[in-house]
Image 1 (cartoon, rainbow, N blue to C red):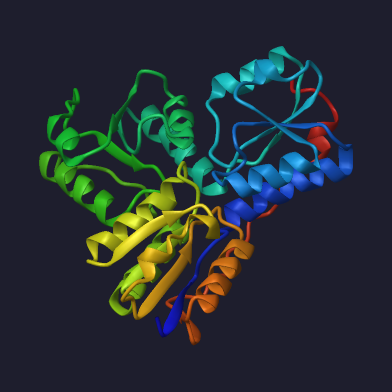
Image 2: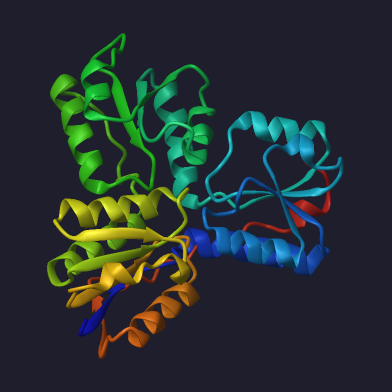
Length: 313
């Protein structure tokens, strides 16, 4: 192995940074425990670090003591969850990524206009559950081209497609193309629902795939965008492995490899990237260089913490 190629951009996106900062600020302002519904982001290391600081992660709000503070994860929640928090008089801080919120608002706008909504996404993903909960029983989930071929709507002239933000750009394009062929007047959002960070990280992986013999994607197994990065590399013809951290690397993977590409999912801390790079240096890499495709400068503002001073109403 002669070199390590590190993707740029990689790791934390603006939505993840915002969500983690919200939990840390809540802990500093109100002290532990602070309850978080679901994993704040899909990364085991982030969750464990916040847990050590006093965050308590729960699956449902009925696990949160009445009157306590609860934070919603970056993936968003359905309206019924807000109703549950009001019933339990919980203090709420919403860390939903603004790009996910945008999708939720589009559901209401197009439902009000009489459109059938088709959501492209993965069943049981937290973001998909939250989005479909905006209009229970009225959104059809499509997970594949085959689903897109089979889906039925009452009015083919009034169909709207939305997408989970962390899907593969290429996979989504094929599904949407199938829907557009079936429904020529298919409506799409003003801007792509696939977030800027997902697109940028996939573009960077495609560039890595052109230069590397092996790509290591750092991210947790339940991270949708981490799994998509592996798929993008493999579709490009380059061997790729998803690793949670440096301990998952098998030395056998490096046999006969000239260049190793390294990237990280949008919920992966940079420290894990540096640990992997150091491991590769120790195993023979002489050079490390960044393969930069675009510079990111997106930042999202924080919600009002004043609203968390009193129970939801």
